[in-house]
Amino acid sequence: MQSLSSAIHAALMTAEPRAKCFATRDVARRWRRGELSWQFDVTMPEYPARPDEPELLAPNKMPKRGKFGSERARIALWHSLAHIEFVAIDLALDMAGRFGEQMGDEFVSDFLYVAADEAMHFALLDRKLKSLGNHYGALPAHGGLWEAAHTTRHDVAARLAIVPMVLEARGLDVTPATLDRVRAAGDEHGARILARILDDEIRHVGFGTKHFMRFAETLGNPPESMWKTLVQRYFRGAVKPPFNDSARLAAGLSREFYADIAL
Image (cartoon, rainbow, N blue to C red; front, side):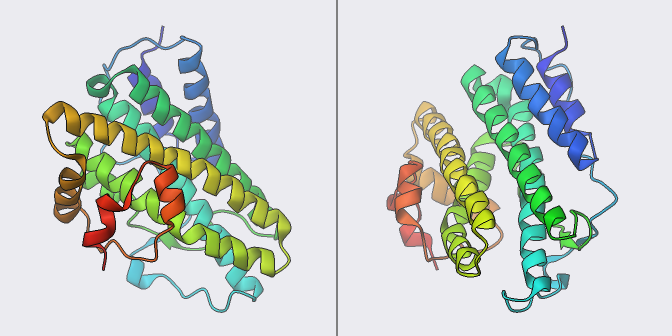
């Protein structure tokens, strides 16, 4: 029987996007069926495999999208979202493979569930791009999205604090406005995709918050103050309003966490 860590490692080192989606969903399915052994005999890579395209650029080198109503701006939006979801597949896989032995069965199940969701999100967005006569990889993409994972690779509390509870939580804040713009432009199909992603991301942030709070409690630390300390130490940037307080609260992330450190 293949080990859990070997299967996750293989998915992380699959570069081609369609193949990575299949590999990720296969790992999650085999884990649910009991077809992978609880062994962590393969170390997770420092960096996952990446396709030759898109070209990855520093944030300050990314081209401007332009006004939302233009075709160029619409394609740039969907391409950017597809890239975020593609990297999110690896973030969830790495979470399960890197910290699963330490954190236990439920942790692994939760984050493999997230990985399968992210693969489905990417597939939806990739099909959206193709319906517009484009494809993932055709435009440059943000090259710094893996940085938070790499910086926190030795600390599960820091990884949970930064990736689900800051980066994914930010998605809860910004997606509703994007959804409204897409719907106002008459793209109901695109709006349905974003609504599905938003619903799923509430659950994803909830998984991260749940496991962070449990871990903090095992250390005897107040979760809110521990989270703030880790964010100040590991997050390069600011926790910025406006916040989608209702979605964050649905994910278990109350204002006690973030209100007094927001800029």
